[in-house]
Image (cartoon, rainbow, N blue to C red; front, side, top):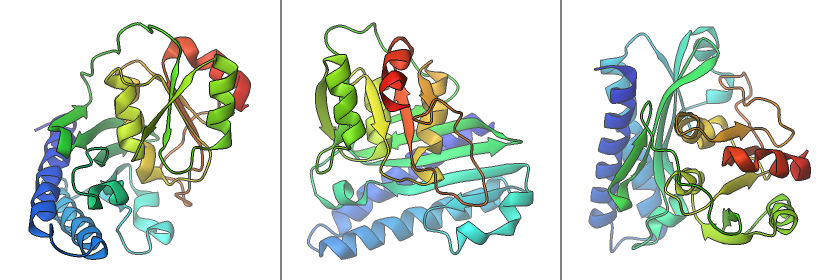
Length: 245
């Protein structure tokens, strides 16, 4: 099984486990549902990666003291995973805008990735991702349903666009590939696991990905904070970056 296939398989299977958790904890508290989902997905991914790729390091949102982990910083291959992206949406039964992220960083680059959308029965994965159809109508800027960032509002105004509200970062990036939106701009603070897999898949689909100043997104750094990014249709990149720089 190659790295692309493994990323897709692990993200999909972790998503299936999360659907089981949702059913199992349907009558439990929101906090218990979130905690169970995070733990079960993380434990599964860590165990599978240890078995399937024992020589690789892992950076996971749920891992202990990942910011100071020296092993991954000396490794040539690091899996960057978010076992449950969008815990709030996951905890709200019936919502489908949450995801599982599995990406592989190797020698300075993202080389494989998968974003599973379990409640949509969908996994988007490298290397073969369909390019979105041509833009038809005003650009749609995808934002959080509770706190759209000022930079996204500025992009909407500059491009004469509209807003699309959605939950997790993975679901937002996936929505561009699904033809449901056109631009995702974030400047409110994120970590590498929030964007590694979505960015890997977006690049495979031919989308533009960068920091909001246009500089490259760099992964597996000592400090895993990666506070901002732009993912959008390539034909909109110049106009978006003119606002965000």
